[in-house]
Length: 215
Image (tube, rainbow, N blue to C red):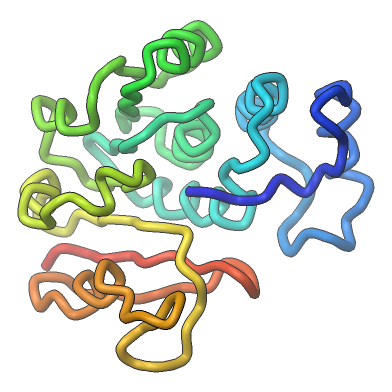
């Protein structure tokens, strides 16, 4: 999940003031600018660490909406600074468990500390370690290694009626979907898999998300 953070401060800008700019310049966003506290906290960590690509609010709000329909356990492959997990927790019912896995030890433990008072399980592990907590009612493939992994291994992590969510696609009006002059095989395979009812949803003019529901 990679979005250009709309705040235009330099790497030396104060994270709080940069984050506040996002609530003032509403003309540059296509979703409500007010963010849940847990999401703002994760965004501040991203800014403090110099990241300029994070979960964009349009995609995050879709994740929260999807999570609100889920019971059991939902999971994220690739925590980063915790923005995606924060959106999932914001939407998920209180009884729904949220787990996220991050391979980078420094990031994983920093997010663990940040979410110490939140009901989110952060694992310092490769995303494949999530298997021990499967099946999931929603699986968000954020890490690039998860998106490009053999799909059969991913599909096995989701129970019947479960969702697989993939983001950061460039909207395409043709079939097969193209990106960079080539067929986007990841997107094509998920949309064309008969074991799923799938749809591509534009969350903004420049990005889309694939939602695949296991039938």
